Length: 578
Image 1: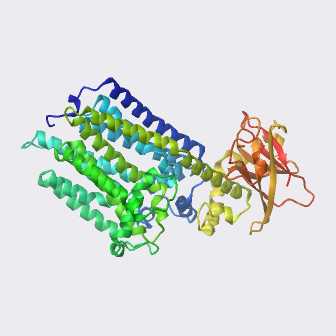
Image 2: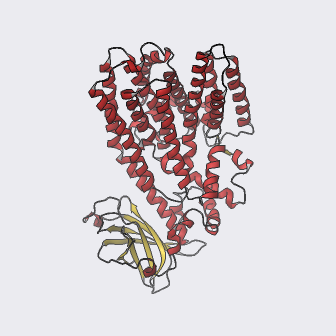
Image 3: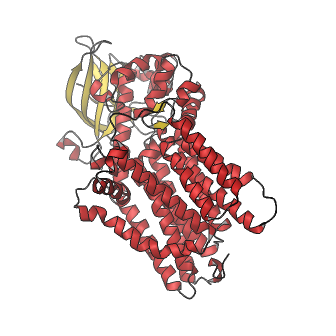
């Protein structure tokens, strides 16, 4: 380490309090995101997650080499498909294993960055707490909500973890070589770095960007010939295998052709990174969209002097930033034919926020390492608190999106469980509804996903046997529309309206429909916006709408709708008849 190490500054009581506040803000961010995961949980797959069930329904093994190697768009998702296979084989495809894995992967990433601060940066005390709080905020910021509530997105969080591990191992190898300039070196760190890069390559296509970065870093650090050759040879062989029988998705833009319109690519790239601090699509001028590039350049160049001093942790941060920036650039070149709104997609924020995290850590280290410049570090801490405050203010927007997603998933589940195949509702799950419906019989026969939920067992049973406690005065609601759904499975009804758990002052946990006292219909509550102005009467939520599905009842049958109240045990409350 150089003379002006981070530990040499004596922190003031004020900076110490700020560091605890930032660390607490990071921990609170983890708690908020965990809350989002819990309230949005559905055992149904979403979007690309249905492909795993389709493979199993066609009789193929979830672990067959052909399936693992098969392209998914431009990606070879070998490792993520193993996660999908485990969820299907051991956990009935209920998504819980996948969602838990995503959360654990981010926790591991946080642990790696926090450990790197100590081992490579020599950070401790005030600086370590501040840096760990920033990393926790960025890695778990609700702006990336799609990647936390969508089980298939395990593929989106793995490459960044592997990239950090690969760069960390490379720098540990380098620091060991500095301690033993002429002696034998252990190959363990080099092996981990190579394996982590391979893991990233076969988790998502952007993992292939690690190989040139590792080669350049090894040359820049003047490592011996062995590690350089290891990266060159392994990277070349891996990339050759990756490109074998590779077919570019025809619906995507040609990345080479996109380079002929550099301004458009740059705008997409800038929006990709700027959207971390927005909560909805925006229509900005080119100047506003490109402003983040100018800000990054103006802020980053002075901080790079900290990296040029050969501080290992700073080098690691710069390498991660280059990986994130290159990922955004490749994404822009391959998605340019889509709308600019896609650049603002929540799922891309896992990469963008990691970029901003590393930039913030780099600036923190640079500010703290400047002798006699404690004011700069305090200013950096105050800026971080403002960023945490901004995150708290806009957290309501991901929360709203998560609730809407949860409602849609529950509505899809109700449609599938009741056998009322409402294609309009099912289209929210996956655009290829024909494939989805061909997969459902397999899922039902093998009790997978939502067909393994307890609610499945309630269908066909008398209401009193499932909900012995009925409370007619604890809810209110109304039916607003009834539509007939015709499908090959038989006619059914889609019922819409609003409902409210008056006793607990909350959205009902669900809706059940009875015909002649027998439960044969299910519904989801929590639709936004509510369907009627009637919901303004004493209801403390703007998500009081519901949709329910039931097979078409015989003529003159008594059909009744009940809310499921949030009591223990759950109780039913009659509120309307269609």
